[in-house]
Image (cartoon, rainbow, N blue to C red; front, top):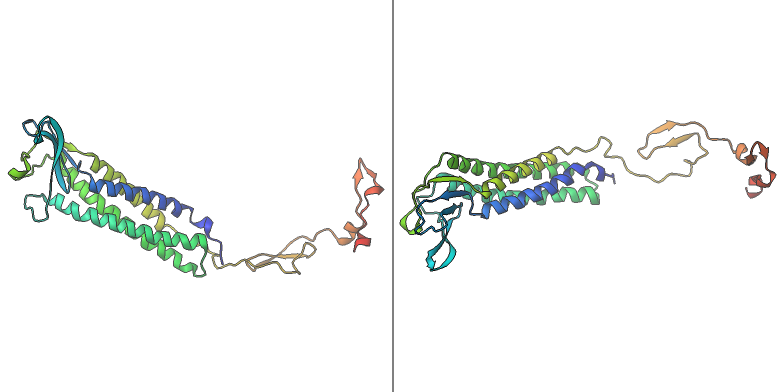
Length: 268
């Protein structure tokens, strides 16, 4: 069984990076702060700021829920709502796809790392695990960057949304800015893309079919040639002859010390 642990250091780092990226992508999916609207009319939106996500819109108000108690008022989006902009509708689907593909890609890569660290007789299947998982993670990163960039474009151009009256939201803000969800989504896409590249870069070593064999009795320190574990032989210099060991003496300052003569003849 070949030793491959040292070949997957980059992939182990990629697994850690993909884990962080997947968590950030999941957080970005659930956050409401995709767009931040600044509202001049604070009659209902008492904080003057409204948050628009891909699943709901929220703002603080102490009028709609309970007087003198400032509470966040939220209205969820429904798939059948016709007023939802196309970029938000697309973001709902792509972010879910990104989270699912990222999770599946991490699981597939985990099987590849398991085969590397625990060993397997079928080493040729390891690159397939990493390529499949890396491809899924790359698709996950692309699925995040598309809605993030599209919604960022809408924020920069100050696009409006025609909310119905039940949402108590104006159709357009005085100004709007990108929320934390977009920033987190960008970081998530970068991390997932990087980890996907790491997994796709995995290559088996050229001598990955080499196996570890025990050293035979013939391969001793007194032989004139040494056999490597891969089966290849190379000549080596001869060791000191046995006769030299039999008559070796320990010298101290150039004076023979008979007390330390090696009595190897008797022991042999």
